[in-house]
Image 1 (spheres, chains in turn cyan, green):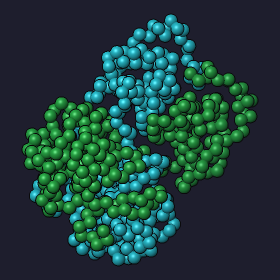
Image 2 (image 1 turned 90 degrees about the vertical axis):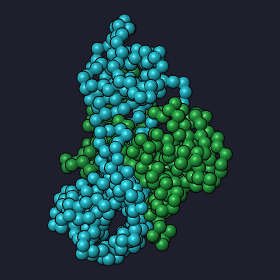
Image 3 (image 1 turned 30 degrees about the vertical axis):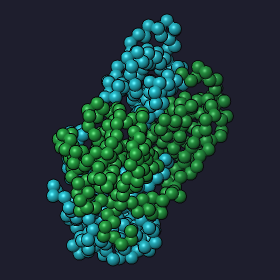
Length: 281
Length: 281
């Protein structure tokens, strides 16, 4: 597809491409090349890549990463032809990698899990915040469920719970602790899933359901929520209700969030632990 | 690159391609097309894709997924030209997606987290199983650390802990509970990371360090492990040591793993919860 719009370089011209791709060294003996959005002829790119690989091999480099923005999708095929394979992708870019040593590949794996939250928001009247969704498998079933949502890349679980409750119901709530979590597999193609049930304290009471996603939202007497056939018939919601009941009656302790300094970024990380018996909380 | 090796189709020929791509319908009003490994001319593919998109639009389809194996990398560029973008990638394939409706995209997000484990294996002599790694940031530092590893896609956290301990040290161990976990961000490009500290009971005692990754492994008196400057100086290992000490002295309870029926697969899922006060364990 691409050569039809690109000048074809002669062998001589290709040999004249004596530059190599610019990249940053990583901490594992590798190189990370981020292609900018500027158009680059795929034949020139292939030639640059060949010269660069030869250079990096001589230098004893290990994993070579190339990040190609979607605008330069015509460079993906030449990279694969030079021995690169897919590592991961996001809407706007594809990350390819090439392991140069003859030894076994020790490159880090791609992200394997999606992370979600369910929020158990209980008010002083013993009512739980529940919603009916406009889409998904519960649509039109009349089932009242806990607000749920996806934890974004880079987002703390405790913050995601606060955000989702606010978005779906308009309720301000404070994260208290993680009551339990479930790991499941093949939830989305081959990817696995972690779902954290968060205990929350409501800080407001007026519900404003999110127009796009939420059909209805209400404060429901806790016993009424638990008595729903959906909750009683399915193992996961029933077990979660058992845990929420134990928490409500104050004889259960989950994991609270303790900020700690981060190993990787400026931002603080959170360590989630059972704070009931530890005096550093 | 590809058109140089492909016959160029005339407009008339392209119009003659009146088939559409075969796909499976998903549960969200979308279509999933899995390209087989058979070579396909990119011009023919582009034409098939145009016809298929027109058909799916008429049918009111929403998200259109195309999984392209790396062998057919020459089909990636034509797909992007028809409006597809990257969703996720694994070494052997790239998944592209195209949201057809005019409304906001409700496609599921890509996997956002990598998951790892650290194993706290304590024997009856109050010794903890520790290792020195051959690569990574602790190489050559003399620091003895807990065995750690990556949880694979599709693998249960409790199984990953057992596997990693066995692989790194040759020790058979039983998973007891998750003592704590840490969420961190930007650990690997933009991806986030969840690290679960697992309490394990050793079932054997003879250590055989893994040749490829482990420099040395030993049973170390617990107090000696904790007294290492590395553990004392850094917040995460110090906090984890505090939790391990509390567990060792039996006044801490983490989350145990309760098998439950899976929502997505034949396999059982695990719900992790504080089992100390719940009578269904």
